Length: 446
Image 1 (tube, rainbow, N blue to C red):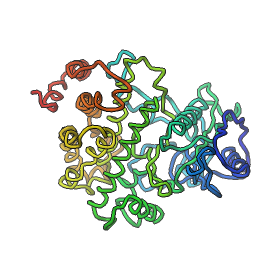
Image 2 (cartoon, one colour; image 1 turned 90 degrees about the horizontal axis):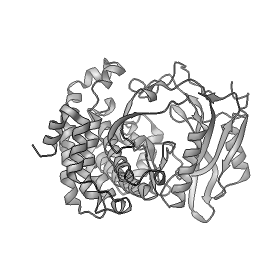
Image 3 (cartoon, rainbow, N blue to C red; image 1 turned 180 degrees about the vertical axis):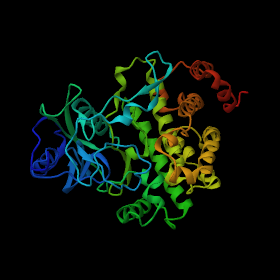
């Protein structure tokens, strides 16, 4: 297949709440089907990014505008030398600078990495992602992203807006399921995720002039002045973004949704609207379909996941020599995300929780710093993975520490839980086994 061989498709869902020109809509469908147009990929993976010729808007509120389209599942871009190629998960043996249409091969690394989850019985467990096609997405997950975007827009939560879902013909099926693509609209024109600030191009000014310009505009929008290469300035930006991320996840839960992947690669800052927004939604689930007993735990897990994913990236190979402990603790992005989420709770009450989580992560960070040269220059991907933080223990530490705070929050009132601290310790003991005594010590109960 190539750009001269269009993909056959059917439009299965189209959002009628947008003001967008018919010509722009046809162009986006032509891109999704490779009908004379090749998708524009701005980062490796399966998501294309297209600037709109003119802003689109929410029909009922023209002040809410969108400046670009994100097309997920329309193909693969796997360039030979992406900036972080040495440290990124392998997408496919195919290696080339030109994008290709969706493939039906399995994206291997997604199905082998264990995630921390909540079982149907309310107990902690390891879970694994469902298989996914390389460069593509099954139609059911494409629709899930569309549906979640529609719900978030209806609730007024900053997010991509739904535009359409397409289903490709029988030539693109994955493990018996039809494949498709989802088109959403972005409140910001720039395609950069805020992960660039935390461990990407923001650490190496000049490596991506486009990001440098976006970062400067972002700092101006946030009201943060100073040398962009100064670690303290960057941490002020990180903390401002972390606070907004906490607010977003709070409102996401109140929209009766759960399972947002809170990695910083799944948040984008719009300098046009001066706000952070949610962008990758195909894993999102409907909270209303869960038994009431499970709803609180799933809401709690989303904020715990976001904290873990933010902190863990401070140990990413590109970031190991970019943060000092004094500055991390002085600015405290863990406290910032908690303050954004728990707005009803005095910030001084959140600091001990943040310090407890730092207390678990810091020894791991300095173990990585000890091996920084080998990590960046010698170790294989498997060797690096063997030094990952014990993320299940971090999750349980966060969940147990945060449990008393939820009853005083809007999320806790929306999803009340009978669980006590004694219940949380018992759950931890059943899951952790021999590691439980370390958990008790971390919680200050030893």
